[in-house]
Image (cartoon, rainbow, N blue to C red):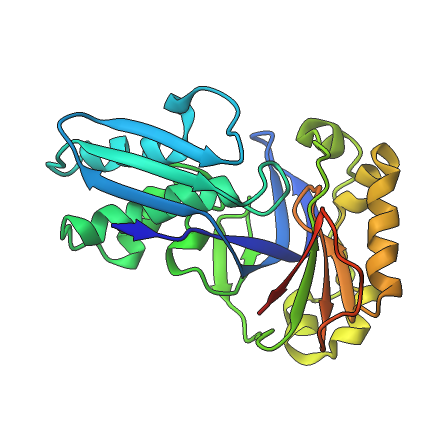
Length: 266
């Protein structure tokens, strides 16, 4: 059985406060985009994990696909499986690819082995893999609060827009960028702005708090954002803590494309 875990972008990202447990509360909107990995699972004599495409750093045992399998194995009588992940979503770019892989693994196992879990049950399990993992269970636009784990509905559709996505090979240290953040409450109502106001007005109020510190560390990212603005984007931003930058266009942008740029239709 094969599924296609998808990436997401952040529309706005405000760090609202630092919590007593050391984590941070945020305000954002997660929006799924059609940039996908491929995840295949077949029954096997023994559990195995292989990957292709973009090289995945670290130990395979830490991969969220395997962690998701072991999580469900504790609750259900799952057989051994062979897992293959073809990695296409850039890693460490703020696109949520790893979290999506873990969540889609839960959904795949639920369907393949007729486990009968509801969305809420799968979201609860996904939350054990990471704060944003539950988002990918239903994989639809949501308004986000808490540590990135509290979701509510948002009336927002970007259908028909073109997304120009830049994924430069720049590793952004999350610890470094958080060190440059001063938490503050949002000056505008993000949910209301996204739902009710024209996209061309978003630039002044729908901001990513990480951009200031990340762009200081990696000035080329600011240049990329300016390039997208000059190309006519209605809105452009960094997603997550970077390093991916995106621009939203009403019509297909006329721009000479080369790595790290690609166009996706929403």
